[in-house]
Image 1: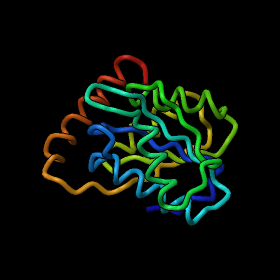
Image 2 (image 1 turned 45 degrees about the vertical axis):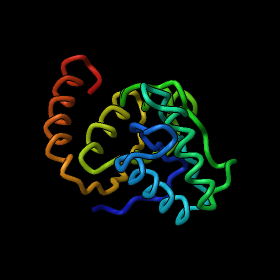
Image 3 (image 1 turned 30 degrees about the horizontal axis):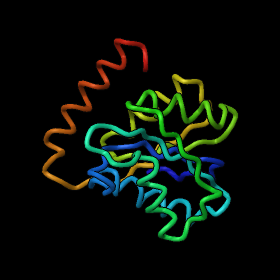
Image 4 (image 1 turned 30 degrees about the vertical axis):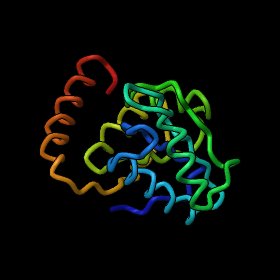
Length: 159
């Protein structure tokens, strides 16, 4: 993996929350964000994700609780709580911070290509992938689903 420069912002893409509990996919993303924020104390994070079916709190709130419980100051965290898709995650997050910043996209390794590609399409000029791991049998479902999502996003103009 290439070196990631010190970034002004990272955008952590949301994933499903079970009640108030982070699912494995979201936990891995949030752990990776925690690691990056600990190593780069000047970086701020946009925590992106609304509230869907079966979720007692927004995905952004769930990430906020985890990060603040692990020592990240709330002033470094910006909550984007309206999005319901990857495209909205990036669009709404970039609307909050603007396009003239260095930005990292934190998401699971199987999803990072699409996340950064959508960010570029939204107009972000300096954007970097920050992949988190994901080890589960569910990769058998997620990887084909991600391939179909890339095709769909290309067709509808998100990529």
